[in-house]
Length: 441
Picture (cartoon, rainbow, N blue to C red):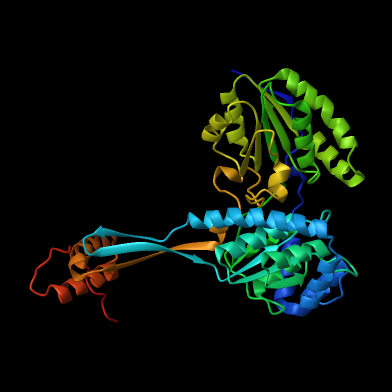
């Protein structure tokens, strides 16, 4: 059994990132001190935006008139699919209760957070789909107050299609803000928006670092790095589709890894030959991103067996994992570490990125080993409750008192003692040796 690298990465996404923490901390401190005026100043400095921060209903309606009907229909199609999938997810999350012992009832409740902030990237690409993915999912989870923001373009504001999507999907407040200032405004509840309980959505390294710093004060969906994708392919795979799928994901950015794992050397050679030409056919910016990603971060890995391919995939834990191989049910049952799984050539990661339903905000940098992507679950709190009869309190109090004293937690023990004395005054219990009272003075 051997695993051979026909093409190996010369860099990792982490090696290509600069240390942005100090800069982000400085911006957050500036906003903490200056509030809304500091945010307005950063909007002017960073995005060249000197217009209103909060988007009005008139702004939304004017933007909608600029969006072609065909594109509106496409956005509605994507929204319906994502909404349908999120609604099905929500149906799987249930309250429950159980009688743990006679007289002790315990349960769990599902409570959505009160408010959410959805960040929609708007740098090199206009991420219409991110608006749909984040706002729709929060809405279906039952979040009462949803704020969305995206980088404004000078003399335009948020691009009309993104604005249309935010409104369609249920954003209550929309802010013409990007970057750290957008994240901070939602976290602090500036410009009349409700203070977010959780911040979600992809963004550049400055956005990611701002979310990381604010985590704890508020919740976040995940710590995100550059997007990554893996294709698993066997001898029956179409080399052109495999190559195109790799290139399509490499255009995300210069440091976006793409990996191919295969048991067929001839297929690997064909894909390696096809990729440069497919990249060359892209528009300039897209080609620049894809060419850099392919040169420095891409890998092509040759395995002897499909079991070896599973080992590689689970070790990498890719954000997107696309299987173009026979026996798809076997792969579905066997693979364990991925953000989202795409089975068969008839689907593609681009479908998941834009329209098919499952969320495209996914764990990167190997985080799929321990977490999944954005879903209604991220906006829900699973909380527990309990109640007991006096009869049930009897064995609970006895065991609690003894365990607490063994731990040295006399105050805990005495809360149990008092209940036994009140409910069962005629009984004598062995509750362990009581700790002596503190010496006065």
